[in-house]
Length: 215
Image (cartoon, rainbow, N blue to C red; front, side, top):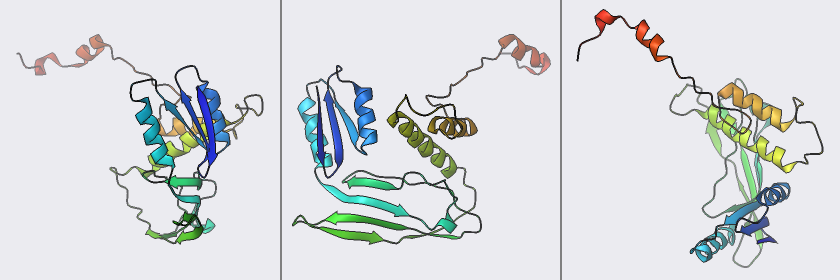
C-alpha cells in the first residue's frame, strides 16, 4: 500500500509493506523535492505513523536558502543549498570548498518562518565564520564534503530518466560521483572494496627466525 500527500513539506510518499515499488516512489520524491518513508509491517506500525506525522506536521522554516559570496567559494563546489522545509529535530548540511586567500566566510541564510496565526515572516541570519587552514586529522572536513557530494550526485542520478542522457559522459552525475569516490577511497554503489589476503607462507619467510622468541 502506498499513499502520497502534498503540503508545506512538499510531496510526501508513504508506503506500507513490501509490495510497494520503493524505487519508483524514491524517484518521485527526488524529482519533487520531497521524501519517502517506509512503514514496516509490524506491531508498532501505528506508532511509526504517529512519529512520522509529528516529524513533518510542524515545519520550522520553509523555502530555505544558503547563500555564499562567489569570491569566497570555489565555483561548482557547493552542495545542495536550497531546502523546501526544515522540520523540528531535522538538520541540513551545506558543504563546499573555500577559495584561496579567504580568511572569513560571510554567508546568509534566508527562509520563511510560520507564526501562530498562520502567516509567514522573513527569517534571515548572516553568520560569519573564521577560516582555519590548519590541518586537523580528527576533523576530516574534506572527506565530509566528498561524502555529501557523492550522496547528492547519486540522488540526482536516481531522479533522472534512465532513457535520457549518457551516464558514461564525464559530466554525468554518475561519473562525477565515481571520480570523487575513487579519489577519496569511498565504497559506494559504483565502487567495490577489494580485500587482499596476504600469503601466510610469504609472511613467515620474511621473518628472521633468530629474532622470534620461543613461547
